[in-house]
Length: 516
Image (cartoon, rainbow, N blue to C red; front, side, top):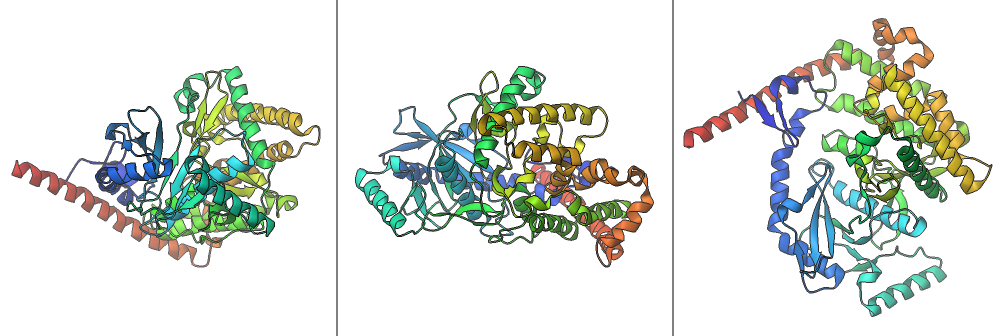
């Protein structure tokens, strides 16, 4: 039996794999799927170059060497040079279909691209002061193609502009600031063509080393506050994601597409939230998020490790009963605001003083209840389910206070004394709503967050009582005990499949050695 197997990052031993909370059977397939997908892109470099040349109206483009390709968790960015030997270059950004659930939920790639393109276009039109890369063009897997007006001929631009004016006169929603065009796209992956961030460096490069610098933190917090407040100036009518229809019109008709939804679907776990689901009430949305956690219990083969683990998780999921304690009826039907749910250190560019110079990766941006806007948990320097009581929480609390004070000052400068968002954020932190909302968006961390931060608000002793879990878990659903029993059996079968996967790899390696 092979000692270790490769993952996308590093390797893993069987003993470690058996203890993981993640479904390793899915993750062990990623290296092969990545090789096959990247090989497909390598063999279609000519098509990639031709697509970019079409969008820019030039005769020649050249794809950068494979070693310059930038591989992220959910996309690959391919440098393409415009009219070489010119130094002008763009990024051809392609979703990794094997990471966003395309196999289990066909259409996820198209959904992701339409929502991200709509987010770029909406921010460009509504909040031009927010520094995002320029979106030069994009194409969807069905062959639909859109180009920025700056890159087309004068006549094409004139026809497009005239049509927008006529539609406005007729009170018909006009298309966004991109022109629909026809192109025989044979790549069929879908893509975005975006410009480089030319100012600053990736925030993650300096975050850990300099995060205790108060002046830099102040600049960062001021920049973040201004971005959030700028987005909040244009509230949206529902909870959901912006998307682009076939005419290029931005509509708020897509489900609130977050990383968590497509990650679940990528593992074959149905989210239960259809693509056309939007919400007019905050509690309806939050209850559906809790349903996603229920679905993870039912469909992930190793969601429950043993009886104690099962009762602990199910007891935590009864937190739907305490939802009214953490949301305000005053904001049940809005306002809903455009929220960058994937805003973290690697998606932020800053200058030497930590003023934000650019934001990238808008793929999981949504219109969400205003109460869900909060201090970024990553300011703690830890994962959200690893902020324990004691020094970690005290330190994080100090940083949150600093952030909220900065946010309040920025809001006061922008709107005067009639503050709105800052008091909501402060209340959510003081009442524990912050932790409730973070738990809902953390499929793997919900139990730990519940036990560490939510349960103790009601009764600290229950955090240490096994009897609490055994009693309350039964109210998760009728037949909860049978579900736990069934999942324990599934866990054992899952572990046997893992052992088989490591055994097959061992046989493969041995066969290669025999042939050498």
